[in-house]
Amino acid sequence: MLYFVPSINEEVHSRLLDPKYRFFNMPGKQLVGCYDGTHIDAIPPPGEESAFRNRKHGVTQNVLGVCNFDMLFQYGHYGWEGSAHDGKVFLDAFNKGFPWREGQYYLADAGYALRK
Image (cartoon, rainbow, N blue to C red):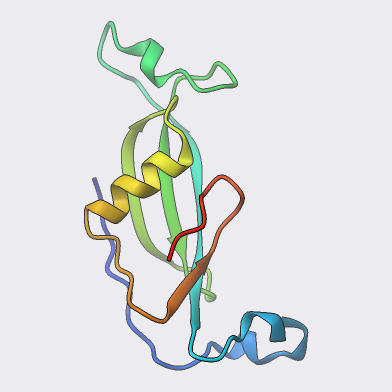
């Protein structure tokens, strides 16, 4: 697994100060980035190809990436088989020290369950 440690900034990012993004500015909460999973090609060990086969029949690994609003990666978690659900990869990352602090939140798509 590969981890990047994000810089902690207590200020609201300047892009979020634009009035069209006002619904992201919640009192007492700080939006710090976005995360999503992606699939990258993999060459698994012989005999393990089926676990790495994703729903589109490619042989991949599922990677969780987290970016800030400067479009810079802040965190990466990889090594999961392509057949693994995004939510399972995120839960593993969270259990292994995903950098999160009280009062912060991230944007994600529906592949991830709502969490504190």
